[in-house]
Image 1 (cartoon, rainbow, N blue to C red):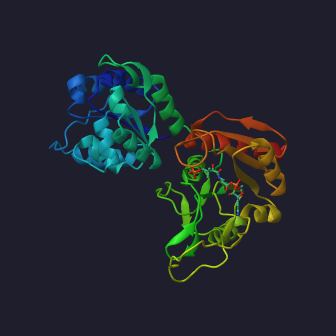
Image 2: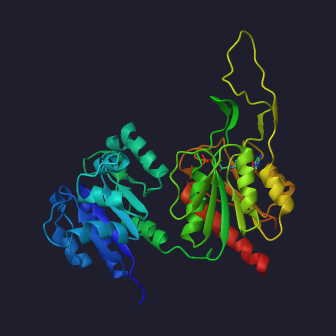
Length: 401
Ligand code: PMT
């Protein structure tokens, strides 16, 4: 018998808490096993009885419940949940999760969760805009938490602006698309590169670029979710290893080249999102270079073009590159695709707001070797990753037919 997927719903103390009844009802009717955890403040807005009735399961409210079920509730829910949603997520719970605080049943269970966590914030517009809240949100997104952005409108406190809980439809959709990903990469081995490289000048200085690794990590995560066996070769980043992905950390372009070359023969698909330094200092000083009067010049030499080398040796692999451009996006990307013998290239204009380096969104145009072009809207890097995989799937199917 197929196991029912488990959704943990964490409710915190905001006026939008009453809207969660509709979400729990819909998810339960769709056949998911839903378990609700409520904070003490949430219970001031709506009673646990409502959720017990709608979900058909006891509602977890007390950190120190003496019942023998306590261990089952706390530990096993964190382990068995396939998805976790915190809705509404107040500034308080966002701050706690972002800073590793676990002082009640909800924050403790989120901390122990082994599954993707979705946050649906709702709060006053000024709280939402507060740099501390924004910095917590940014940190959580970088750590892989999914955010369902709040909507704009009239808020319960009488002000207008961003902070309303997103539509229940959007939250439900975010959860379902997370849980019901097609396993269309099952049986495939996918190699992803991510992040910058560092080219040492001396023991304390290096040349690098602005890549955070987010785009590549989201591709690795998405490919894993869709059933692939995923290898990630990563330059230096602050990101946590995506769940279930085999990660090899490297520093320089030459190390990345070696790591990628070692895996190349055994993989079916390569996606090169890393921002590899084209040049390195010709000489790396073993000692810290002392400053002196006047100018100093640095002689650089070319690094291997990893993607070009892979294109040259390509036999069975499907090869996908990225193009980071600041102008003539399509022309330059097309050119790179041909020169490096790629099957597909993902072009992003890195000077455009919301695209390219850093941040949690990207805006890309995907070109393939059949001359097809797909322009995608600005989306989170996670959604962009899935859209890239959709295009790879289509291309692989075209190759077969
Ligand atoms: O990491 P994030 O902060 O999320 O930012 C994402 C990103 C902007 C880094 C990503 O979306 C992106 O554009 N990655 C490619 C960056 C890049 O180096 O572009 P390029 O146009 O210089 O290189 C073209 C392709 O050749 C890339 O696939 C690159 O990995 C590859 N290359 C480049 C140089 C080199 N020596 N070896 C390579 O393999």
